[in-house]
Structure formats: structure tokens, C-alpha cells
Image (cartoon, rainbow, N blue to C red; front, side, top):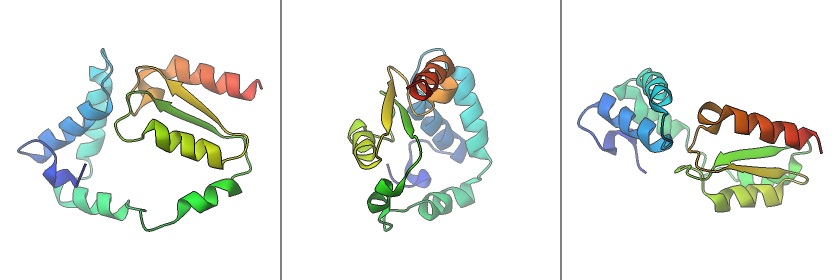
Length: 129
């Protein structure tokens, strides 16, 4: 995926719009894409790459700490999420005892925004166990 300065588009706004569109492929979600675009623009072009680099935790071995999670854990993602693979979710699930994965069919990276009813139902089902 690379740094924001290398994403498609000629301007920072165009690059952030591309990212918002990429993360929310659901139909009838233009209002959420606009919201995401507006939020992303708050970082400013000069800071976007730095923010991505600062958020890089690839050198941390977080995977070994997952079994330490001792609270009920529901892992929610959309089947169309371009940032988080189903394999990654399944790995996280396999490492957190008693966790459950809820895949929201046809949702992208923001299912809590694009499919709130389905996310709420998954949460209710999880705690009804």
C-alpha cells in the first residue's frame, strides 16, 4: 500500500479520497466516504507519511502477546476490507482464547459505520453466549 504520498492522485485531497473510497466499497456509502475523507484531510499532507510511519508496529512482536488477552473478544471485520485479511483475523482469533470472529458480508474497513445493525447484532449474539 505504501505511504500516502505514493497513493493514486495528484493532490493530498485526491489521495485521501482514493483511500476513503478504497476502504468503503459498499454501495450507498458516499456519505461515509465523505466523512472519512474529511477526517483524513485533518492530518495534512506534510504529516500523512509521518503518521503512517509512526503507526508502523511491524517491528513489535504483538502476535506473541495475543494469548495474554483474557477478556471476551469479538473480532469484527468486513469481507471486503482491503486492509485486514481474513487470514490475519483467523490468526488473531486462534491466539485469543475464547474469541469469536464476526465477518460482515459485503462490508469494507468500516462495518461499524456502513453496517451498524449487523455489527450490533454480532455484538448482541456474542454477549448472549
